[in-house]
Image: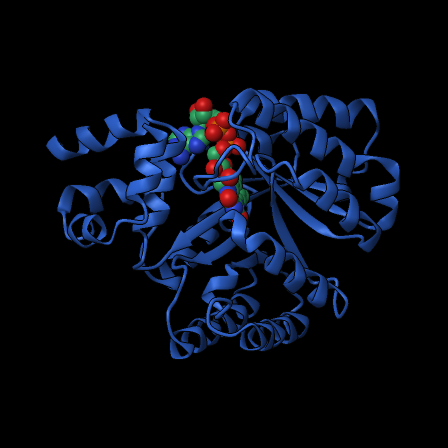
Length: 306
Ligand code: FDA
């Protein structure tokens, strides 16, 4: 099921039809407060009332022209301004292929520089999402280049990739902000652990590495980005047993997923950031969310009749 859904996520024919279908649009609203930045900001304000901070991301990936990259960059510049004026603690997260990585790396670098300059001005942070495995190397180059200029940048790393252990090791001396995720793309066994149990174990190993004293002293910040409550609780135990300072980590989850657990974490005094996605180009992203939990398919089917 996971493979079928992930293969479907990149199918243009399916995207064209599904995005026009009312029941699919209804079921998407569970994971997405709306298609505009104002919808996302309203959702961020509601979460703030529960003591939850946020990260905003506009859906869309693999744009095809320099004009589109410019449009996305302009959009995020405006988001940084709007957040600055709103009084919300909301960071932003971009995909390198939204800034033009596929078209022209120098253009992507320039767009990132513009966002970082605005983030400096607005006292904010820009996160870089990690996409499919061919993008890991250029994404880390983009991160390192940006990190050399400012600490106001973070990057996502995927626990399903064999290489991530080494990448973590190389980023620790930079005092990097790192979001550890399990990984959402369809990857071959030559680059990624095929067994979920191995991914979960690697996730724990990578996080505990980033919580060790030398990483904390270097200034690393870990985002424990998972809805796997068993794993999150195991990491909370590690944190308590090793007296890891609260400034060294935050939990992170996606909007609309494990809502009860989100409130539980926030009420227990843990720092939690919820990533809110918005935008019109939601189809591949939505298919990846369905692939993460086949039970979600039942939710879609129920919505069909609801
Ligand atoms: P896992 O898949 O094991 O799920 C644990 C439990 O959580 C499930 O049993 C289920 O109960 C619940 N759950 C998980 N997903 C659900 C869903 N869609 N609907 C309902 N319940 C669900 N990936 C990537 O490749 N690059 C990136 O940059 C990011 N960025 C990112 C940011 C943040 C803040 C989060 C939380 C996640 C990402 N991801 C990501 C996605 C990540 O790689 C992964 O696909 C999902 O988080 C699902 O994995 P879990 O760690 O939640 O565990």
